[in-house]
Length: 126
Image (tube, rainbow, N blue to C red; front, side, top):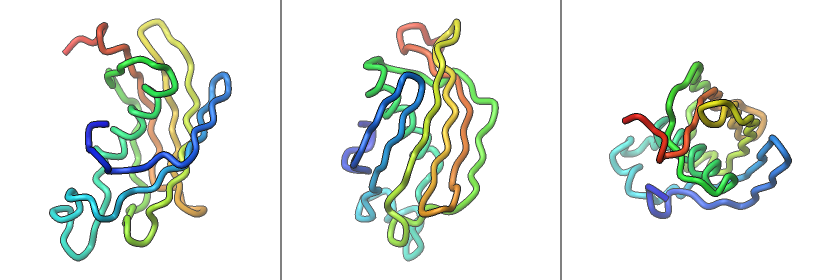
């Protein structure tokens, strides 16, 4: 986990090509002291990191985001108001890695949509 104690995995269900997970963001994490004091907002880069880490856990491989074709931040994730998130990740093996389509929600609100290609870290061109 890149950011120690940033979130907790509550559930992680894996189907052949689908992952359903619930997580809780740690509202007391030091990231929120600077982003932003008095009005905490979960950084988008942290949300992308969570998706990568969940896929690494499922695939049991270290991954690198090679590309993304669509990332939409649609609602602010305030960890004091909505720390519990539902993530749905559909994934397929492709030539150079794994194509992942993610939807992240809190309650019935879509907060993030992401389409990306993750490759095994050893095959990443950095």
